Length: 281
Image: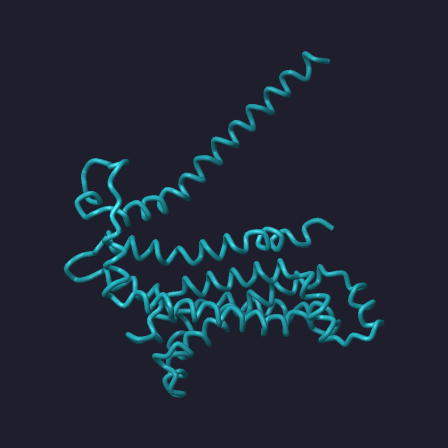
C-alpha cells in the first residue's frame, strides 16, 4: 500500500511545484511593469536612462514635485475623482432600478431584455463618439465635466445591470416574501433586505464602474477642455514634439494608479465576497 501511494504523492508534489513556478512567472510578468514604473518615478533622468541596471539608488521626489507643482495635473486628479465617483454612484442607482425588476418579476421577454442591455456595452465607443459629440455640443455641454459624467454613466450602465441582476437573483426570494408579510412594500424590502444581503456584489460592481471610468480616455479626450481634463488625458502633456518626459510621466502614472489601489484595498473584503457570491449554494 505504501509503495503504491508513494509515486502518486511524489507526482502530486511535482505538479504543485510546477503550478507554483508557473504562477510565480505569471505574477512576475504582471507586476514587473508596475515595479518598473514606480522605481523610474523615483529616479533622476541619468539614473533612468543609464545603460547599467541600477537596482539600488537614492530615490528622489523631484519628479512628483514637478508633476504636482506646475502642470495642472492636480486639477486633473480632482476632475477624475469627481467624474469616477459621481458616475459610479449614479450608474449603481440606475442599474439597481433596472436589474432588480428583471431579477424578481416574471414578464414576457425578460431574458431577451437582459441580453439587449448587455449588447449595448459591446458596441465600440469609437462608433458613437461623433454623434455623442454633436449632441453634447448642441445642448451646450461640450467641454464640461457633466458631459463626461453622463457618458460614463451610460458606458457603465449595461455591465452594472448585468452584474447586479445576478447578485439580486442570488438573494433568497423567501426573505422578501417574509418581509412583505410583515408589512414592508417592494421599495422598503429592497433597501432593508435585498440591498444589505447583496452589498458585496454591489460593492464589486461599483469598484468595476469606478475603474472603468477612471481609466477611460476616448470620451474624456474628445469632450474635455483644458479645465475639465481627466488624468488619462492629462498624461498626454508629457509627450511633446521634442520628446517624452519619461521620469515625469512615470511619476504621473504612479499617482494615477494610487486611487485605484486604495479603492481596491478598501473594498477587498467585499470584492472577493461579491465576485464569489452565488458560486456556492
